[in-house]
Structure formats: C-alpha cells, structure tokens
Image (cartoon, rainbow over the protein chains, first blue to last red):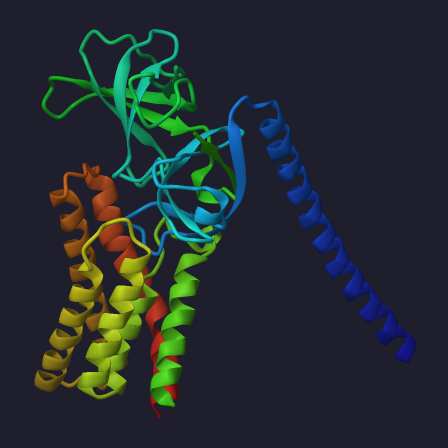
Length: 197
Length: 156
C-alpha cells in the first residue's frame, strides 16, 4: 500500500515535470524564432515580454516588461516576427504600455501591397481591422496583403499588417472599406520586439 | 485593518483583470471585477468608505487605460452614490435584487464608456458596441456573487 502511494506520488511529480518541460520547450521555440528574426533584421530591436493586457474590453493594450531604462519611448513601433503589433503609448522606468493595432484609437496609414492602393487601417476591438477611405475604383480583393505605407511618419514602410477577408461599401455609399485579418494573433502575443529609431 | 484588506482586494482584482486569461474571455469580453466590488462595498460597508474605495477602484482602472481623464473614477463614484440612494428606497436584501442592480450599473457604466469612446472620434462598429455593452454586463453579473461573498466576509 505504501509503495503504491509512493509510486503514485512519483507519477504525479513526473506529470508536473512533463508539463513544465512542454511549456519550456514551447517558450524556447518562440524565443528562438524571435532571436532568429532579431539577428536577421536590419533594424535595432529590443525584445520584451507581455506581462499584462487591457483592464477592460473597451480598449486593446498590452503592458511589456521593458521601459525607459531600456531606451523605450512613446511612439516607438512594436512588432513580432509575424508582423505589426502596435505602438508604445506610455513608458515608465521598467514597463511600457503598447496600444495594439486592434484598438480603435489606432490609425495606420497603409497600402495594398499588390495594387499600391492607399487607405487608413483602424482597430475595431474585434478580431479584424478595418481599412477605410478606399475610393470606388480601388483595386482591392479578398486575400490581398496590407502593409504599412511610406506616408506614415510613425511606422516604417512595408511592415506586414494582415490580409483582406472582405470588401464592402460604406454606409454613406461614397467609399469602400475592407476588413483585414491581422497576421499577428493579438489575443495571445507573449513576446514582442520594439523597433529603436 | 478592514480598510487595508479592502485595499488589498482592489490590488488583487485589478491584477486579475490585467492578467485575465484569454480562454476565460467570452466573445472577447471580460467581466468588470472592480465595478462589482464598488457596488458590493455599498451593500456591506458605510457610505463614506464605499464612495472612497469606489473612486479608488475607478482610478486604478483609469491608470491602465489609454484615455486621459479619470472617467472611471468619476463613474464609479457616481454609481456608489446612486446604489446608496437606491438601497435606501428599496429593499436590497435579496440576492436577485443585488444582481439586478449590478446588471443595471454595469449596463450604464458600459454605455457611458462606449459613448465616451464614440464622442472622442473613435469609430466602433455597432455590433462590437452592442457586444461590449451587453456581454460585459452579463458576464459581470455572473461573476458578481463571488465578489459579494468575499466583500461580505471581509466586512463581517
């Protein structure tokens, strides 16, 4: 009986260790990807971990574990190996607030990669972004890739935002809009890179 | 001692809201734990304590939000006062009445925050606005009995 209990204890312990190992393995894979991207990128980047998220559902922000001590300032652009994540809106000594691209306060000057059609990408608090102010004759279709435009003073040109999943007409019937699925899974980001100027 | 414990609860609830796991989100909505605590304080403590701690709950929330003015601090104080006035007019001993009050307060709070977002130039799709307004309120009501129990225990 005692031996069975002892063995059961060992099984439980090993289960926990296996769980821990899986978690460490996944983290290791993510960090390796991040490091690879950082080494290959021509930009100066600072890696940071997401430590908290929005306190309510009316905004979309993330708090990262790097701040002024690491040279992070408001306005800097945050990315991950998949694409654009957001911008730094506030920074304290050790932490910074990132306004994610799906926050409605976010406005990104962007273009359709294939046709070079310009538009403004806004967050909607949902899983998709919206590209507005597209003229009637705009060449845009489902599946098109959307990247940041060189007209944006905040974002470097050519950062990947997402893909078009739907094109529609505004309520006013004057312009068209496009729904965009961001390439970054904003609900589950764990590590990000901040672009230093 | 009780007030210190209440302050600790504010810290714990704010931390919980900040690190709320995404798998517990209901259609991207999370409950407003600090709002429930603000309402619960009115039922289980004196009005002055409830008002002060309610304002502190709002300020704590404002500290982590992108917009500037302390809109939550203002709203939470207002809800404390309104619930206090209501509890003097009607009996709030029954649990369902308290849950009803949480639902109404949460709906009003989300309506104010949502309209504030819209008036500051943000364009939110109607579906997202309604989703936030209704689902956050319902989720907040579902979670509220737990926070009521905790507040009652500390206040006793």
